Image (tube, rainbow, N blue to C red):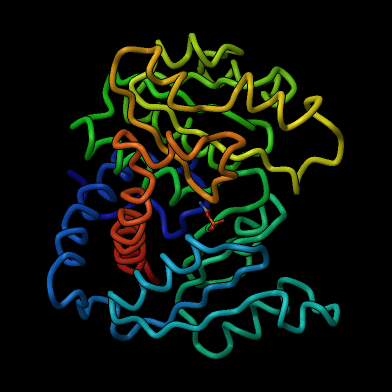
Length: 309
Ligand code: CP
């Protein structure tokens, strides 16, 4: 196995190699063991300063990165656009350069504009980690999803993973497709035709508009939220009809007559894409995904710090 990542930034799963993903997952195995010890902290990033720049709302990713950084003993600064001088018209580059002049080594950034982390990576020296850029990629979510599936099923190789819901507006879907395929899984996307991009078949995924057929097919169902905040036109007649045809509930799962792992990146719209009796069932690993997120982000930070200039 490689001992170093092939990149100094994590901008998207599309831009890294299978051996990078495997190194991150193997390193995360070790950090998962660390965060389950009574003393959960290691000194690995003691001389490293990390800025978490969140230009868009987040609960899980922001807290998970901050916890991962603190568990690695890094110095951490948090920035949220809503309470910053971005509101006074400052550009992204000026904001980031001002923060970097305070000797920051790594930047974790969430931004509504696809490509914003790549833009920064070409302009500044710090390691950049994409924590979600618009509808483009959310690489650490895909890595923690892959880690969680591997933990449940032992391997990704040959497993059938369905991604169900609003594929069109989802950065999680795109990062998951790249990550799962690189690890040898078969991927199917499922949802209403209006919420599946026309190009998706070119990525080598199957496309289905039948939840019942997809649940029969898959080993894992990764259910995605309807991203109403990114939809400026109507993509389906009503939420009630969406739920009836594409929502996952216990009754649909029981008809399958096999055990399917249920995943969701969060936040869940309970009762819309996923009912409570499915989200809270023994087949759901949603909270394990969140727990694994800390170990996976520790691994990403640790390995990228090793690639610092
Ligand atoms: N899964 C995820 O990115 O959640 P947050 O938007 O809460 O960070």
